[in-house]
Image (cartoon, rainbow, N blue to C red):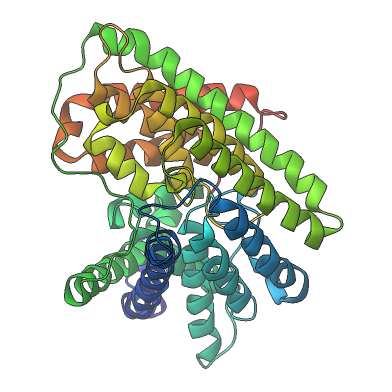
Length: 426
């Protein structure tokens, strides 16, 4: 072990990882900043220019139809087919430099138009693509094992920029790798190094430019509340219910993926239009903005956590129903990440039940995030850490509930899976 860590080749790998974190973070910053600017233009500036104070109920119909029309040629004509289907997991296989333009184009053309997916999978593709490009530019014979580590390092550095920082990304590597001992340490150190340097550059550019990057964050003013018997009495069955809802949506995604495997172009356009119908239906039923049900959900999650009492229970139920249906269709046909929307769905379902006797809003938010993230990733430890970091100071008293909700969610998800096998998404 000591010989491996102090070897010249491994030290060069650590140096490469530190250097690699800088361009990966810069690429991720400009990617998410551009996506956020386009999103704001589609859902705020353009409706206001047309005389609407907010997007009208029908706004998602042409927006999502356009998303399907621009995505179809990317999927059928460009290398890499725009990236992997999100129903198959978070990261997918490493994306090489040849496939990377299609992944970036698919994300930037469709995510701002209201596709119910997040930016995390395209960001991981950007990280692995840039890492593999750096490897191919180096001199010397190819080393498949080193290339695999570098690709993982690039993906980890990329996802750490918007998913809670280096700690969440490192825990994800540990949990998803399924290895231990010297192999785990050898994989973890480059990932930590690249994530730390990348997060530093990403945060610095955010402060310097003042641009919004759409990271998954919650208000820092969440009320602290110690969990009591009522929180566990209602919370654990609620975590199981959230796991069932997420599993049903993923099942819809698998069926949609099978349907779009042939006649891909027209069927993807049809699926995108169906997503638009779901979002428009939410706006019609609730009288609220369709933007709440569209997009990845991190902005809506922040609004929901900041003032949960401003949301009627009926609106939360409608959000879970219509956004969940749109998310399931998107999982099997469109391109993006599965985690962000699932977190909003879990939080919405839990907060809809927060009026039950003995269940508080902060415990409901904590268990909803943890259960949903666990259900979609299959990584209970990573999901618990993500929930703790998102809740900040309010998470200290919620840790037992967060951990138990993650355990319940992973057990229920595995029980509902068709083959009962490993369902980890990273």
